[in-house]
Length: 227
Image (cartoon, rainbow, N blue to C red; front, side, top):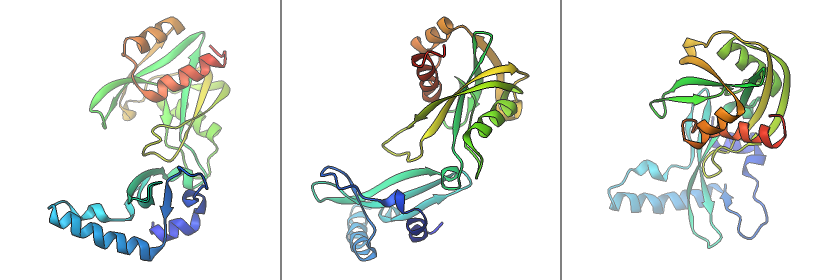
């Protein structure tokens, strides 16, 4: 997607608040061009990648759009600043994370994750799909990943994964299951483990569960007295 088309189509993503200490997004093409010219000279002199001066869409794939804005900090300094946006958010969908519960036990999955190149203990999640409501998406993820059906779904609110780089919030749910099946090996899920609340907290405390989404969903459910 073209950067200027992105600005025109989603102006809310480029709105500048009036707060004194807010970071301002610069969208004036002339200012951007002048900054890039200066930045390219610096990069060339220091024998650094010239691509570091790129402003606009850096990556556009089926799941994410990575953009680098030119921003102005409160002290007047300007620099490039990356943001990761979930494509589903731009198309009427939203990523979801679902904490499954069945007969007072909480599900944890042992799943292989490519980014960290390791086996992780975590709960079901999904990127979201265009024009699909979060509740429908949550039910789909439970069906696809563990072959389960949801009896009752509780919305837990959003969590912001990393406010330093990720611009799309994720919606958390707790799902009371009526049934469940087998782990989906096509999703790299090796097995399903059912833990009591005490066991779940012990796994978090000792670091066996380290996934941020899983810990966030559990914490929100516990504080809302669902567990």
